[in-house]
Image 1 (cartoon, helix red, strand yellow):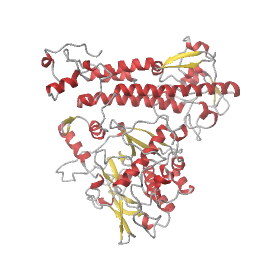
Image 2: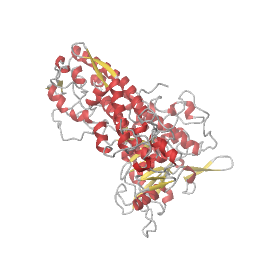
Image 3: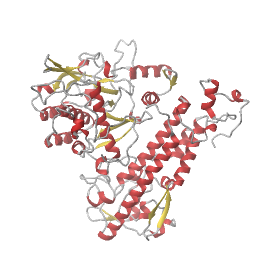
Image 4: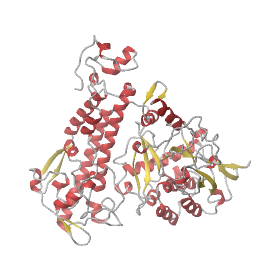
Length: 621
C-alpha cells in the first residue's frame, strides 16, 4: 500500500492492505432470496471491521494524493487504495461483487450528509453479505420529518424483501433523510429506529457511528490519540463533494435528560452520538435465513447502546461539572476527550516537532509546483481563473489550473496548522485535569504550574522549532530565497495560490519589500477573455487565502469581496488571549507540579504558602 504523505496518527491501528488477519466474521448462514445473498450476522467483530473500513476511507481522504483527498463517492468506492473492500482478503470469503456503475452514479446524484451514511453502510452490508434495513419515518405533527419535534417509524426497507441491490439502494437513498435520526427513546415503535445513542467509550464509539445535529448528520470516521473525533460529511451542492474537516467543534446541541418529567425524560434526546441498530437474521437449524429484524434495545447493549450522554448533560447542567471516577470535568467536550483518549501521555513538544518535519516536506513539494507553474505560464501563456464555473472552483477545477494552482493544498496547510493549535490547546486543558498525563520533559517543566506557564512554554518551543526549520524558494530572477517555517506562519494568509503570480507573491513577499523587487507582474485571465491585473487579483483572492478548509461552492474573482470575512487568530495571538493572565506560583519545587503532586499526595494545585521552603524558579522561561 502507498504511504499517505499527510497520514495522521490515529488511535486505532489499521492492518496493512496487503496482509489482513483471518476474516473476523466468516460466513455462517445463507439466504435463498433478497437483494443480495446473506452469509454473515452483525457481530462485535463485524462492527470493528466496518470501523476499520470507514477509518481507512477517512485516512485516504486526509492523507492520500490530491485526487483522493478530493474524491467523491464513486472514486472512493472504486479506488483500491481508498476502498479496502476491493481487496479480496478484507472483503472475505463469500463476499458479494462490486456494485454496478449505474448504482454508484445514483449514489452520487443525490448525495448529502444523510445519504452519505446510507450509501456507505448499505454498500458495506452488501459487499460483506450482511442483512440490512432502514425505516420509513413520520413526523409527530404530520409535517416535515427533518424539523419535527420527533418522528416515529411507520415501515421498513428490508434487504431480504427486495429482489436487487440496485432497487434497495435507490429506495434507501430516496426514502431516508435526517428525519430518520429524530426518533426518541421510549416512544411507540422506537425499537424500529435506524440508530440508537451510544456510550462515550472508546470500545463503543468507533468509526461508523454518527453525530446528529439538528437537521445534519456527520459520519464518525476517526478518533485521535487525544480523544478528538473526526468526521466525514457531504455537501448538497451540485458537485456532491465528500469532505473531512469537521472536528469536535461540531459536537453541540445535546439535550439533557429530564429526570422525572411527566412529558418524557428523554424527550428531544436524539441529537448526539448515534450508532446503527444492527439488524439480525433469524435462521433455521441449517443456517437458512427466515427473516431479518431489528435488534431490541436490550440486544444492542453489547454493542454500546447507552443514554449516558443525555444523563451526563443533565448532570453538567445541574452541577456545572461531570464527575467521572477521580476527576471533575467542567465541559462535555472535555468529557469526550477524557473518555476517548488512547491512554498515552500527551506530548505537545513532540507534536510541534512532528508538525515542523511534516510541513518542511509539504513546503518543498509546494515549491516544486510553484516553479513548474511559473515555467508553464511563461512558456504557454496565463491560466484562466475558474470564475463562476459549475465544473470546478479554485480547489477542484481541472486542466492547467489543477496542475499548478495550490488553493487546495494551501487550505490543507492552514487546516493542519490549526489542527496543531487544537492539539496544543487540548494539552493545556488536560494539564489541569491530570498534570501527569502531559509529557513535559522537552520543556522547562519545573516552571510549569498553570495554563499560562504551559502556553508560554509551548509558544517558545514553537518559535524555536519553526525558526530552525528552513527551506529555499527560487525567485523570478533565478536566485534562492531563504524562508523559515516561522516566516511561513507569519505569511499564513499571504501565500498566493494563483499560478499566474510570480514566485515572490506565491510565497507571500510583501509589496514594496526588498524580496518583492524581483517579481515580474502577471495578470490573471478569466474565462470570457478579460484579465484582472496582478495586484487586484491578489486582493480579490484574499478570502480564499483565509480558509482552513476547501469549499464546494463556485469561485469568483472580478466581483469578489475583499474584506469583512473572519480570519482566525494564529497561535501566538490565540494563546495570549485565551491562556495568559494566570500568574504562576512564586515558589516552585525543582521538578514542577507533577513531582510536587506525587511527593505530597496532593489532589490539587498548591498555594504559595504550601511551598515556603522550596527552591524558587522564574515562571514561564
